[in-house]
Length: 416
Image 1 (cartoon, rainbow, N blue to C red):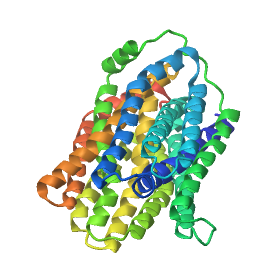
Image 2 (cartoon, rainbow, N blue to C red; image 1 turned 30 degrees about the vertical axis):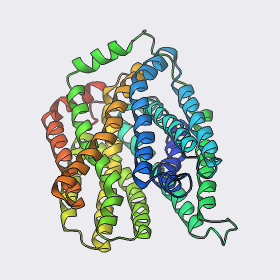
Image 3 (cartoon, rainbow, N blue to C red; image 1 turned 135 degrees about the vertical axis):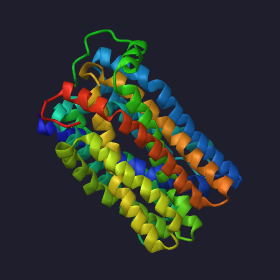
Image 4 (cartoon, one colour; image 1 turned 120 degrees about the horizontal axis):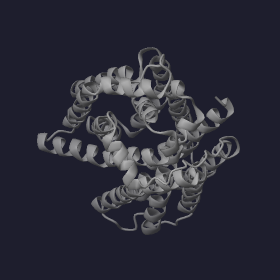
């Protein structure tokens, strides 16, 4: 294993998580409502935000298998990662320059940045199998997520502090400080992507001219992959709903916005060591076994949300979710990486990416619909738990096929 290449690869998560945590989750929605709205009604702002996010996710989902298969044939996985990063960085810098009232340009540039972020993640995931041996995939995947949580958390903490002290720092107001933070996230993203460019080797082309249809046929006929992708789609749907509905849940029970920011930072910094620990546990007990255990904890935590009444209980719940969130994401990627052929990693992760992107749409809609039917935002958490539990059942039913598939692809002493 080339340790320099592994750490350079993992550093990319540190790089782009600043954008995901600060801009995607916080700054863009706030600036759209406070600075770029230009007379839009509150419901229209929500619609613009939803369209910008949804259309970008749809574009990534549709393009991912085609781009992944093409990169496999041409040996352009790292080049595509850097090209997508360049798109995201440039679009974010331009976003920071959009003047007040320019919601159309803001939404367009945000969608382009989100497109670069999504496509970049596809090729970042696909490079995993080329920087770590099969018996260390769980540890390597967890290292990436761990660095991402730390990097994203540190940047967001700095941005939140700057916005809170905007005038003391010489800014005209909070909006100007937010715009500078948006630009800073782009520079952070670009700067910490340089190790990938310098030290991660470009994998050779896969050799065979494999089409998207052929990749799909291989996935469908594999003993374990279809079941795993179905399980992943379900439980990632539930996790996505938890992540995206948490702020609404907290505000609905009376928490202040400052408390929500603190809870988000808590999740980031708890998830960092937890993701690393999950990777180490997977080497002893197997990634699938640890993943099943963490999904059960997540499901129980969602049901426990029904009893949350104050900030203390909310923070405790946030810590539990943070403790399993990173492990669920990292181990899912590691399990799939063990199943994917090295020469077709781009095409295979293209389909993996589809399930993740559609999960970010369907899960929150399901949770919101159940909360609407129950006439209480508290119902969104048990709704998410149902998705996680169904995914757990599917994963449990195929666990033996995953064990055998994993052992056939790597060391006989390695647990999947």
